Image 1 (tube, rainbow, N blue to C red):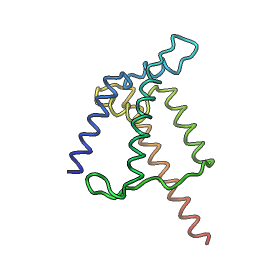
Image 2: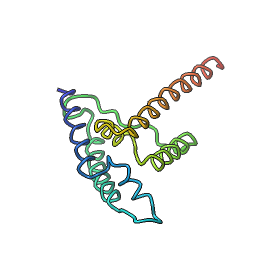
Image 3: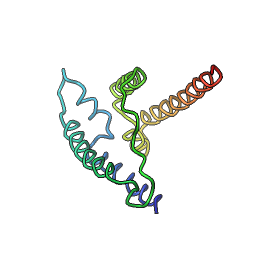
Image 4: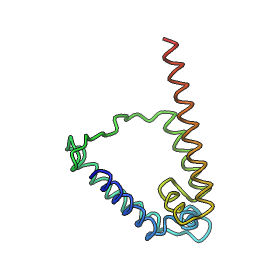
Length: 145
């Protein structure tokens, strides 16, 4: 049942990205280009997503298990540190250069866009490099004790 609801949620998200045009990098770049013909539609999509997210997190905070019975795992970290800021900057720069972020990139990958293929390969490579570096960092910290 969990796999089915995950698939259903992913399909709704993907169709939402397609319908709103957010899987089109030019739409995103049109929002980020303040000097050119600015397209505010991304701001409206973001506002809608934030509204849904605020309600969903408010409900989730009140629960110990999901509607399907799985354990609720809410984020525990609340500090803003150098790693969070650096990661946010890298994410934003990549988003601004490509006009894609992970969700829309996967939707665009399904449409066969070459730009999405390159983006997803770079994203997966970045994830692998991060995991490797994180493993090394944790190993060093453990052996230093």
